[in-house]
Length: 95
Image (cartoon, rainbow, N blue to C red):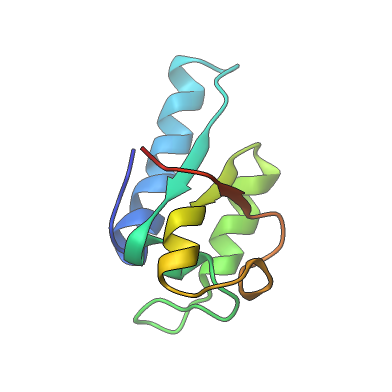
C-alpha cells in the first residue's frame, strides 16, 4: 500500500496490520512511504490533535511492522536518515 499523506498512512496502517494478522498470522508487513507520505516518519511529527506519530509507529514496530522510506524522495526533498525516527530504513525505490 502506498499513501501520500501522514494522516492517511497512520490511519490505514493500524487497521491493515490488525486485519493482515487475522488473515495470515505469519504475514510480513512492510510500509513503504514516498513523497509527502514520509513526513509522519520524521522525528517530532504529530497529527492534527498533537499526537506523535512516533508512538503509533513504535507500537506497530513492536508487532513486527517494518517502515521504509524511498531514497529518491529523500534525495529530492534533501532529507537525511537522521531526521527520521529510529529503525526507519531507506529503499532505492518505492515503486
